[in-house]
Amino acid sequence: MYARLNALKVRHDILEAKIQGETSRPRPDDLRLRLLKRMKLKLRDEMAGIERLLFSEISSGQPDDRRRQPAFN
Figure 1: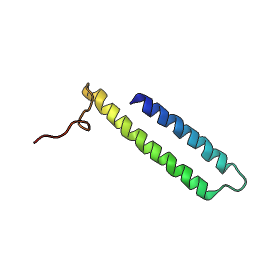
Figure 2: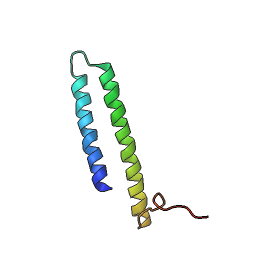
Figure 3: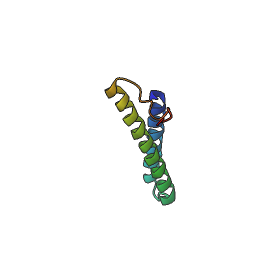
Figure 4: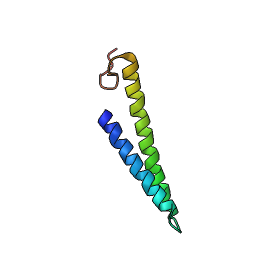
């Protein structure tokens, strides 16, 4: 899980650099900027979800297996 989070952070930083590069052009491509920002937002949302999951594991002292185990009534 930590490896996935780190990989997402690297991709997030790459997208930020691409956004900065595009905005520094004399005539930035608005469509490209919107696409890059949308991709960056999706990464940020995924990172937040993983961080919430990791934080719940740390605070409870054990892995949160609710997503992986079927519910029995």
